[in-house]
Length: 180
Image 1 (cartoon, one colour):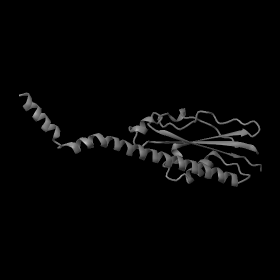
Image 2 (cartoon, one colour; image 1 turned 90 degrees about the vertical axis):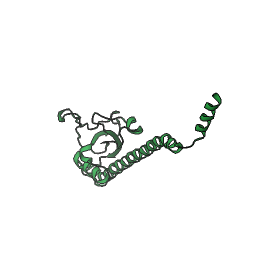
Image 3 (cartoon, helix red, strand yellow; image 1 turned 120 degrees about the horizontal axis):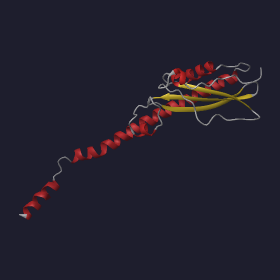
Image 4 (cartoon, one colour; image 1 turned 90 degrees about the horizontal axis):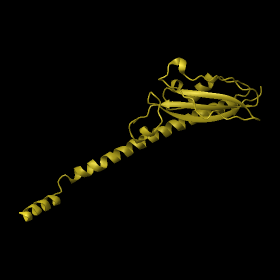
């Protein structure tokens, strides 16, 4: 009796039907997670690169236009024109601009201010920009909100998100306000 049970068990152990399905069940979730992670990271990198490019091109345009005092909205529009592949740039980007004396430099506030669509309009952060005086350093920080493609995947869960489920990307630059 025992020998018959062992023989039957041995035959079933040697049976290879379903081996491919077992391998698929074990490997597919790992591969799908890696693909989602790769796509999400690639899109984050693309957005970061385009935001950096847009901010750099806007600051370059401001530096070349000596003697002009650009407004907050003009610089924001320049950034959005040069930041390719960034959707809803004007609505999803918050631009902080702070002037600082070159001899007594003060950096930007450590916490970045971003838009938050879950807040009512009256509760949104307000940072007023006053164009700098001649030879003042103007620090710019652009904060772009975006929705992750895979918010429940590995990287999507690690991102710090607001109440609307949007993550933020930051870019920082500076220029010197030229004398008139």
